[in-house]
Amino acid sequence: QVQLVESGGDSVQAGGSLKLSCAISGYIPRSCGMAWYRQAPGKERELVSSRDSDGTSNYASSVKGRFTISRDEATLYLQMNSVKPDDTAVYYCAACRQYLKDLPYEYWGQGTQVTVSS
Image (cartoon, rainbow, N blue to C red; front, side, top):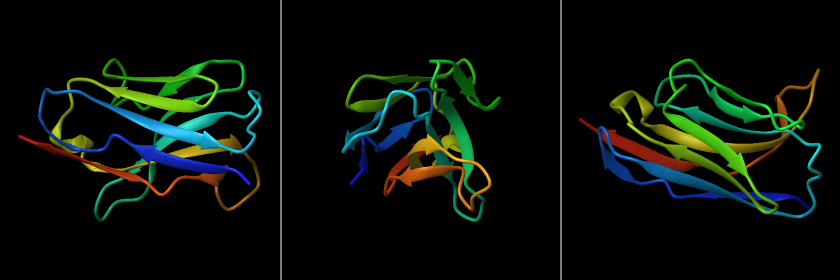
């Protein structure tokens, strides 16, 4: 049974930094891609960053140059620098890219709240 548990969400002032973590329990092969999504109030869930099975990292244009995704054996991370009020959202960790399904990833965490004040 795979479980993803996010942590590190907090309230922070604009310009500050946060590091989100996603603890992985159960077996997820390194070949599984992983990603961070976020959902702001009244908006659809959007992809923030993904790390493909070959180690390639991808970023939404709104966070490129400010956020960094990384992974070790048991945890997925999202380093968030120079945060802006528009980064306020619930952040979700996701694992194992899938296609032709309702959701783009097979496994999802419960989310962690990030609030950025101006």
